[in-house]
Length: 310
Image 1: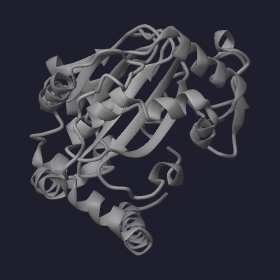
Image 2 (image 1 turned 30 degrees about the horizontal axis):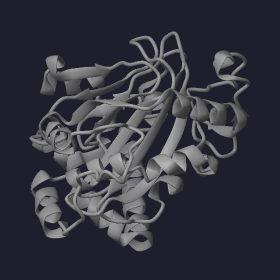
Image 3 (image 1 turned 180 degrees about the vertical axis):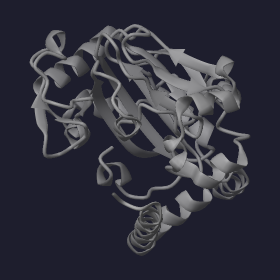
Image 4 (image 1 turned 45 degrees about the horizontal axis):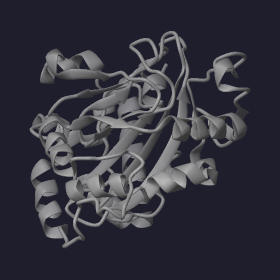
């Protein structure tokens, strides 16, 4: 049996080692993630990094797959509520991405050593490998020409540019399945982002999400806590991403259960979020969920998502 003091010193040593590795291997990224957890630092850095950009208005020559968009209203809603719901992908785009997911190798629990191929979207969840909570297409997503077009879509870029106040830098994209499985431990859920947490990918960044299958409350909807991209408790700013170790119920008690929003919608439904708010992908209980996410930021820190198994 490990004594409590031994466990403490082990955790401390591991924490110091990770900090040393971060500081020596990726100093810009390390320093950003240490400082960006504090709202006052993020606001100061965002103002400092704000750069003149081309107009965020969509010109008549630029046709967005999302149709007509009120970019200013969308950005304003994200600023106040953390998230804007109401984007919509056309059916043909959804079908192209579904076809891609049915014909490309994904990776169970984002583990590059556990490849898996979907046998058709209607059979997802059947004969899954053991301990399969999610399946991500990771870097294989770069093979999708449809996804490449979406990453450069004028409507998506206009929203990102307006919100960021600077030219949008593409940080990464992911197509992933979430499967209906037993709840498991908090650690298991944390490893696949199924607990409330917030991200620290830059001083200012934004994520677009699109459901590629119908999502209701039993399909693992994305959930966020309205307004928590700002005015976090001081403790939650100090510990940063380690907020994921806190029980969901305690997070909801701090910020009000009435502010928790479960995002449901048909295939193609989209929303855009400030990932500094508390959010999670809920665990599906009956039906699997396929979702696309695309992220933009102000700064380029290299392929940080691929390095950590995004």
